[in-house]
Structure formats: C-alpha cells, structure tokens
Image 1 (cartoon, rainbow over the protein chains, first blue to last red):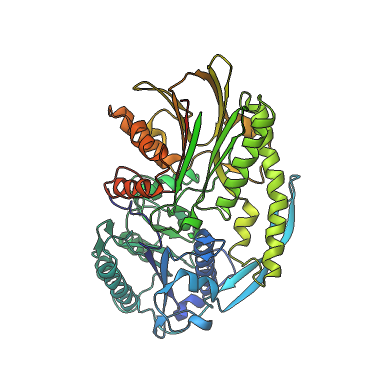
Image 2 (cartoon, rainbow over the protein chains, first blue to last red; image 1 turned 90 degrees about the horizontal axis):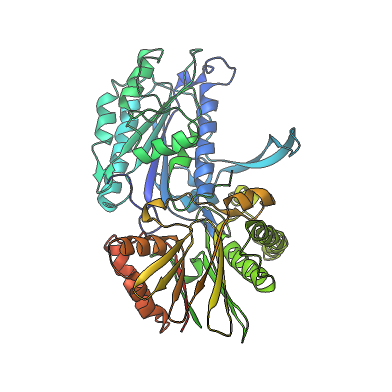
Length: 277
Length: 261
C-alpha cells in the first residue's frame, strides 16, 4: 500500500513550498483587491503555522517534517525571512521557533450564543510578499527536484515528499510540465513524490478545489498547472470528503483561487483529535 | 483476583511520551476497579488528560456501582473529569509562566481545542459464593475482552478488528454536553467465575487481539505470559517484533489483566 508510511521523528517526511515572487504577483486576485503576492504569502504563512500546530506537543514542535520555502522571481532561492533566511530544508521545530516575527491579528469566533466575537490571535510570519522579476518556474521546480531527490536518497522509507507550488502560473522560462514530471519521478518505498499547485489568478471566476477534470478551468495556465498536479492519494481524498469537499476518484492536488491550507488536515501523524457530534 | 498492568510507548518514543494511561483500585475486600485511557496523538497534554480521565472514572465507579451500568451516570463522571481538568490546566499554565516558558503560539490553538482521549473502565465485584459481577463502560475504541477456558466470551465495545480507525470517539476535556457524551458511551455487564480472564487494552493491542482471535489463535495466552509475571522487558521485545512483522500498528500500548483466580 502506498502513501501509508508512518510519519514520525524517526521517519520524517518533507515539504517543499515554491512561492511565485514575480512582478505579475503585484496584480490583484480575481474579484478582490488583495495582491496575488499578499495572498500567497498569507497562504504560505498559514500553511507553516497549521503544520507547526499539527505537530506541536507540550515539549515543543516535533520534527515530523522538514520544510523548505523556495521563492522564484528575480532569483530562485530560500524565501524565508528572519533567522531562517537563506536556509533550505529546515526541521519543523526550528521553523516553529524561529519565525521572522509574530503579529497579532484579530478574528471573529463564535460567542457560544449564536453570534460572533472579535478575538486576538498570534500570527507568525516567515515569508513576506515579494513581486519582482520574471517567473522562472522551471528553475524553481528543478530546485525542488534537487531537494526531493536528496531527501528520498536519505529517507528511502519515508512518506513521500510533498511539493506545493503557489503561483499565478505564468512561467517565463519554458513549459513547466517536464520539470513538474521530473519532481514526481522520485520515489520512496511508500510512493512517488507529490506535486500540488495553488493557482492564484486575476481572472474573476469561480474558485475550484481539488478538481478531477480541467473542463471548468478558465485558461491555459490553470489547465497546465492542473495537468502538472499529482492525484490526491486515497487517504487524502477520504479526509477531503470528510471535510465536505466534493472530490472524485481522480481528484488532483490543485486549487484555483481557493484555500489550500486544508491540505495540512489531510496528513496523518496519529490519532486525530476530533470532537463528538 | 489478581490485577496487573503493562504500558509501553510507541516505538521511537520515550517512556514519558506514552499517552496511554491505566489506573487500578484494588482495596482489600472491596470491588476492583480498572480503567484505561488513550490520549489522542494530535492533542496537547493528551497523556496527562488520559491519566486524569482514567483515575476520575475509576474513582467514581468505586464510589457508586451504578456509574458503569448507566451511560448517563458514566457521562456525568466524564464531565466531572473535565471539571478537574480545567483546574489542572490552570495550574499547568501558571507553572509554565513561572518557569519562564509561557505557552508558545503553536500550543495555544491546541490548548483552546482541549485534550482528547478514549476511556474504558470496569468494576469487578465478587460475592461470597465466588461469582463476580462485572460492569464496564467505554467511550472510544479501548476494549475489554472476557475469556473463559479456551474461548473469547465477550469483546467490548468493538468486536471486529476491521472496525478500528484513526478517528475513534474521544472525550474532549472541555466537553460538558452530558447528553452527547452519553449518546457515544456504551455499557455492558455480566458475570465471571473463577479462572476467567479480563483484558483491558488500548486500540492497537485490541486490534491485534481480535485479529488473532478471529484467526483461531488464543491471544490471551500470549498476553497472560507477560502480565502474570509483570515482564515489561519481555512484553516490549515481543511488541517490537509484532510491529516489525506488521502484526500491530505502532502505537502506545496498555493492557490491564484482571485474573479471577
């Protein structure tokens, strides 16, 4: 059975996040005022925070994952800011303990009486929005491939690495499909590396989450990214269904102008802390 | 009646990282109470909550023989454990502050969500004629097995190895909804006689036990070899082999053996 390896400190897995930092990320996301660069930086910071919380125990965050964040725009390289600047794969405990800063944000939560009340939460930041230069997506995927290749050589029995690319899809250094395929040729005993994509677009069209076909996608960029994305492994489809998402048997790890942080909930690190209903 | 228990952490974890708990109350001439609880790995402080839960429920069942016969009373004991947890947690947070290690940003959301654990508790009351009445109540997938002669007489609350998954029913330390807890709780009673064995097991061991029994083996003999002598090292070695052979999921393991000798 594939994609069933235990994820533990003795047998960790890895995440490689690719974040598009090209000039086109200055444009607003479809139907909104927020810049695409702000949306992907926010999504990435939330993904890192969710992952850290998921792996947190009372003594600290456990190194169930090692994490790299690679930016691509005027250059291709580590997108961490703060103490982790310049680093590639970092154990998750160090990610959790060394954000560039922790901001305070307000959010509305249920007040228990049918209404909402505003509360303050701590929001760690590792990556700032950047929009500068071209979109060397092929080079970014090649960097990811190099990290993945090294990882599977050192951790041949691990849950396969997951590469998550956050982009507006407008590659300027060629068709990224070949580089995307190359990432997924690296395998552990538990399966092939997974490549997922979050496409943020200026087009004002309906958000799409984990589709199994590209027919509803609005443009070539979206269809290319869909085609590059791995199938969701069965257990991830199961958790997506549990969360009320409509996912088919051929659902791919692809989202279009939609929230992808739910991906963290698809990872198994032990008994889930779910409430009775 | 002889009661023994063994507890072994998941392979790769230190003993103090084991998030299973067992609690036994065996006073002279009184009933015997035994409880196991299994903290959810995704929770913070899951082991501490499992310990408090097992102890609170076992103590409640010692003080009132109806607690394990009636799911509403059992649910009330679970709510009481949650009340005790709130006080424990306040002390914990204060101690962390005092030690210069305040709650980190990544702990906050999990503390707010509450700690989660399964729980199963059993009471054994032997009358002067030698017949033992037993009552057991559970929420989640920790199990009790009742064996007699060479047969498994009862498996509770789960009777099939295929029914285990990684999202069992769990008691959230902040859950005060007694009716909801009662709906998910199960209780059963029966009688035992001299020579019967009862094994309270957390899920990974319980799943192995049922699979082995389904295959015609007698897993109670295997466990009894270790529990009767309290052979923790031998049990740990045997578990490592079972996990390596894929016979058992790598998880914390706890067994309490109540032997009606």
